Length: 425
Image (cartoon, rainbow, N blue to C red; front, side, top):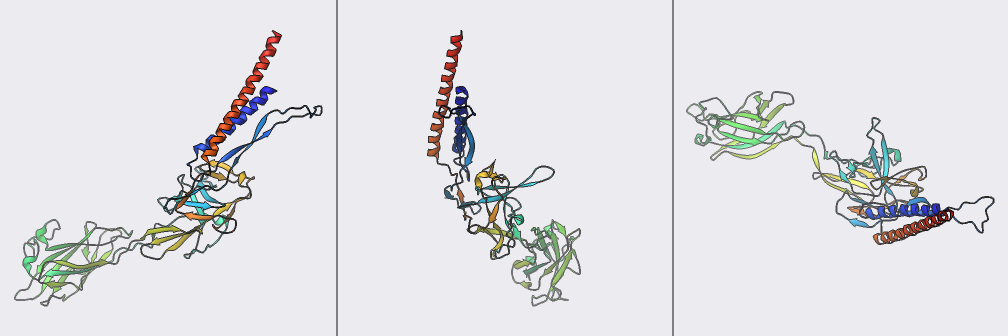
């Protein structure tokens, strides 16, 4: 009997050492909740036992209880680092890896989050932070646990628009001697973008495709006519290239200037590309003119657009996520929720400083940060482990002493049994 009693002490002390060692190992783990080992004595009785002379039968571990007290909060400056000051857990969605693709909701105080490639706010394990959908002003649309969804921040706002019109104002030289490397008027050879003697001037222009991607575009000016005895007009033929492909003139590609240096004919020249998605580009050159000087681009613009990228992200103390796109005003894209339980001590540890609900913990209760029953949210900060290293070291020494004492008791029981065996011999 005494051997079993000592053995129970050894097992209990070993469990205590394991729990304490785990606390010490995770002293730097963000959001970690420490634990302590709780024991109860074993006392066997029978109808024929005498209570005054009955001895105990050792000890047993009743549970390893979690400590849900507040940990210290440390500022980090990262807007996606979140800390809870008070009661509550973050709700995290863990996607299953099986064919059923089941999802599991986990709960944690660890608030080290970042954005995935698609804008979803996740932790280092890839678990998505849950919250509620909101209107642009931050008003929650439906505050119910079943309506919680992964918080995702759109990385851009608006739809891309392909360029349809390029407004190009250029100053072209009146003097044919300033027509670049072009060898004659008109050139002696046909137009070739690789042969500088077949064109007078070239300029890049901005353009976007249907996906909002910037594409390479250029306009070539070929001087094809200049003033003579029959006409005072100066004429240029234009060639438009986009994405390395030359577009075909839809109506005409010549730009003519009179003696005063101002355009005399059509100034909006349309060019059509070949292939899917090429479309038609209009060059608007209405403010172009001939001048006594070198070729110069006065201004250029285009009507295409890209989706406006995310430029700023912030999270309020009430959990509202605000996103800013370009120079526009901030708009709300979601609101974080917190979750509490009737009995947090009944939560099941799942690792990664997270927990799962059980029948003992009760059903989760969701709410907004800062409201009654829920703690405050601190953006740009993290909650450290609620482990006091000094206290844990003292507990480790105590558990070690208990283990040594139980081992000594087992040694004593073994000596007594050996003594009895020796008597029989």
